[in-house]
Length: 606
Image (tube, rainbow, N blue to C red):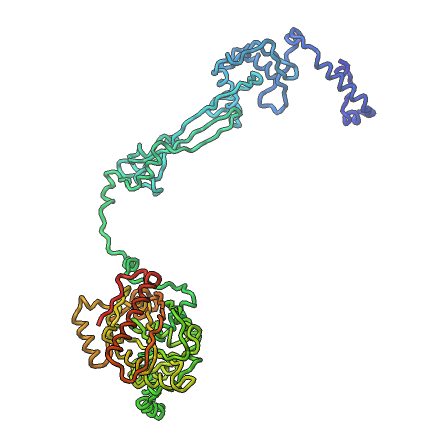
């Protein structure tokens, strides 16, 4: 024990204070090895027991103490007979430096759990004591601590269950009556009232939450919130409202409410168009609206101009010119403008539905042709798109042929509108106009390469224009056949699938008096006005705008005709029969492609 008896300090700072020279590195290592050898020597138990007692130090002293000193204090307390202090196990020895060693092999499994719990409780109370040395229960903190050595025996976590009542109902709304006593006043809850639950306060169907406290071996506390049994079942029964106690039942009286404002708009039968409509669709709607209201709009504009006296010197001569002009029947097509027919706006017009033109056979540009358009529909939008403009590419499908769409002669007596129609290449459907168009113009000046388009069914057929059906008025319409024979023009049937679908019409079968009135107007004025409706500009159900439904215009094969100045009735009937057969062929061949939603088959009436 040379290192212990050496009076010279080994710390370099202490040696510097005493004026001693620093030790070399070799001397320091040698002393440290000698000190380790002394510690390895066996401890004499008798010497330890006969060693004089160490001076006691107060527990609350700030001086550091070895664990051996603590054990001496414990023995002193045992000698004085202090209650509640556990006697150390006989197999545990004290070491001067505070180490514990086993003298005999101790079976830790035979210890009682109460001993371990007592030690843990004492240590925990000692740590959690207040500044005055007291514990949480108000007792004095013991001045000595007891240790039993290192225990590596695994511990089972202590599980504590604590129930905490919710102060809110299932729908997370505060229940005012939960915190009231029988007299209707709020009751104060003390801190020890954690055992209260909604059920104890009179609330039925309430569900408690459970707190689980789990303490691990190192003393850490883990808290887990778990819903009680039946919690999720209660969530599915939210319709069972919590009923207040009897003394508050008068506050839940029945209420009678009025109608909810704005509820009718959500159930409205009118479907309104959204605001975020693409600009192309807006332009399509604008062009179709312009053409649909062209007659009424231009006629109204003329009367508006007549209200300006300064324009009378111009309007009066113009009105006389309109009444006397023969531009619509002379067959010269002098006011026809190919530039107007090729405007881009007509492409928007045709793409509104959309409309398509289909060809069954090529037509020779050295012949004359009469196109028979079926059905009339309400306004014949398909005929205007295919033969009144170049939007569908008529010139590309039928090279070398100039086609003219014919309409009522009275339309060319409407100021301003007649100029619009003439620019688009339209002409009168009168007999004189048809003969002039087929006998004049063309490469040879006799109408070669000319074609006219007649809506054969006329105003009578417009009364049969009902969606997803096709009834043609053609049995007794043989005037166009006689015209074709006299002019030597071939007949070309044209069937427009979907022309009747773009408007709805009042059912005349349920209202026969409406049909009689329409027929009377036709006899007097030469035309009739069907009662129709479709969609509007800003909605999809009410208005005069046509529906966006496809129109497929199929041009059939030509029926060849031999020119005769005075055709016989038998020849007229023969050509008429062949013409109808070609119409039926177009329907049978293309109905499954262009009329899938049809409600009936083709009918030839009158």
